[in-house]
Image (cartoon, rainbow, N blue to C red; front, top):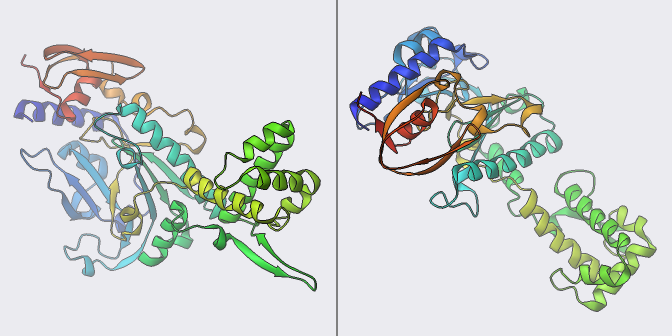
Length: 385
């Protein structure tokens, strides 16, 4: 990045912070703060800062107009201490990170930026289903990172003292690591028989049971021949097993609804095994394990600007996630309403603010939010005036 481009972005970031009132996270004075300045040839973070050293947050941002801004998930007695052990750890928020370009099947060299972010939002919805439905967390802050994905901050008092191992267990649960049918069933014994029963009260057992019942309801709506064909789509379920399963579902739906995996013989257990694998693949959330288990992690400040995109790190209301479009809603108002000339070095098409822009090599005049995006991502330099 050339110096005139850095100078331009520094100035426009400062203008953004002059017009924006940022809210700090809870207990900001107990957190470590860090930032990356617009230094030529370096993205080295300045960290081990406290608010006592930085000063009032808004004044600091307007004065330093940093490229990136972070605060710690952890809370400390002395957050400005240079040595981590000297900080005096008090606890930490539980933080989750979804990076769209790390998701299975996503190729950042091939897939459009907007499509990757849409995949990331789908994973975010799955994650929130776990956090709220399975764990019962209520104090959640959902944030678009301004770059590759989404963050979720859990500030429930019950999680603050959790160590790395406990946080890793939460990660493994959300990612469905090692979940198999044997883990989700229990054995019940009576005077006449032993039966395997799905644990339907909650967790992954409830998810698999719900999927089994949804399939049973689907089968009962189909003509018999189509229902048998539908069952034979599943691995290791042939015509004979399909007939046994369909008979059990048709004649004794209540037994399946109770979680009993004996009625229907080996076929119903094979169906439950395949369903378990499908539910884990479909409903697990692809979160970044090191972020959640790191008790000292620094995370982006909502309301700040992402120096790699020029987009705003945006807090999203819980009821606004479905409608949220990062390529429109995270565009800073400071960059809307004027044009700028940039020298494009990486031509191509980008989509921002519900518009598509096809950019050639060389000088071109574009809306400023497009120009800032291109410059921040290294695809253009500031045009000479």
